[in-house]
Image (cartoon, helix red, strand yellow):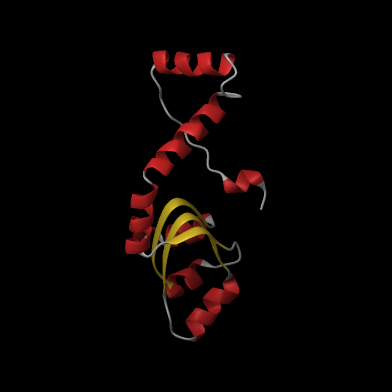
Length: 131
């Protein structure tokens, strides 16, 4: 998977003084750029709350990381009369060749904390089942 597919772009608004402080740290060589500073700050906060995050992941029974659902997997679920509750912390991807009908037949609910990638048609079909 390409590096660009492993990340998600976000936009944040910062006060000008905070932004200036970040720029000063970059200028002084503490960080390579603003993005480096922000990633470091985010990772530090995630580490600070690591234990609480782990307990919550376990309590919510979330899959941690990257999870891909193929057409074959969903067809096997449908053939077996089973349905899927997608619960992912990270990236959940439904393959491009999955039809909206197959998704509706096999996916009961979708809860993704991170990014959810699927065709526009599949996302539209699952809209009412997505939290």
